[in-house]
Length: 173
Image 1 (cartoon, rainbow, N blue to C red):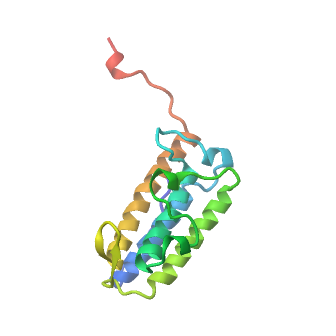
Image 2 (cartoon, one colour):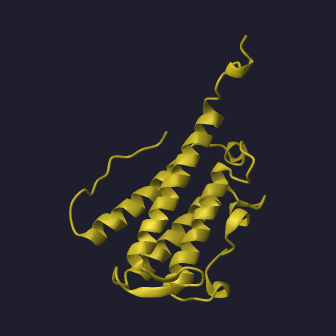
Image 3 (cartoon, rainbow, N blue to C red):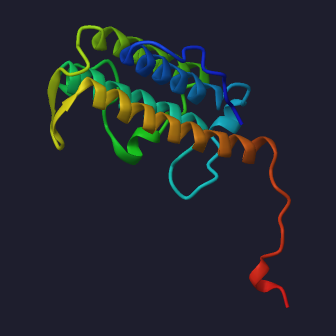
């Protein structure tokens, strides 16, 4: 399991939101650190979720929420994939773990630059949700990345330390 001690614990709301989001970004990356290319691509659940796929998905989320929604860029002008859903977890065979980490870090960097031009209460329009502000976007992305870091922790544990199968309790006499 990955976990880091928060470094920023006081201050203005925006400082706390941004530091927590950055911490969640880092924790998501930490779930794949030290995994081999093959381990990062292991699929251990029914969905297309893999450790590397979680990062690919997070980069898509960064682009959708910060470039497309907040900055109002057409999806065709965003600097990478913007297809949400299961497709956002798919990693091409020619993409390495280092490539996907770098792509996520670039998307995160661009999100920081875009967000710096907005106040927390500045409103933009999401195509399905309607009016949203930067505060909402920060909170939504934090929640999404925290959840996915948890998924990554579990996948990593399954890969690095597989559990010994135990008999199903319902099959006991």
